[in-house]
Image 1 (tube, rainbow, N blue to C red):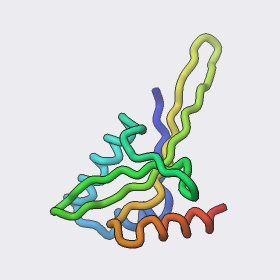
Image 2: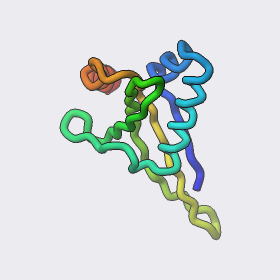
Image 3: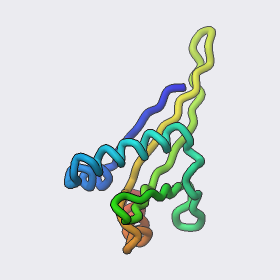
Image 4: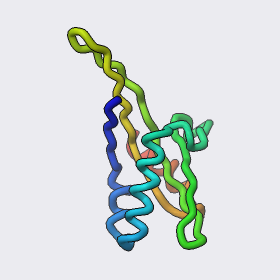
Length: 108
């Protein structure tokens, strides 16, 4: 199964500003999400289709907002599955959901 990972600008900008150990932890969390996409909590309402994965680093809880789509691609004699991930936002709980809603509204 092929995985396509796309970091949105807000996600990438957050990562750039972080220390090397924290960036490594974020990478581990992204890899975990990619191996088990349903591990996050599925949101409803304004955020339907978005999953939230929570993890702790240095006694601080962080949230990762992501979505994924599964595509089936058929070649001549084989059928391949592709998972496409979109990572929208990462941050602490403070104003996380409100900022995420505003971001998603601005992109529609």
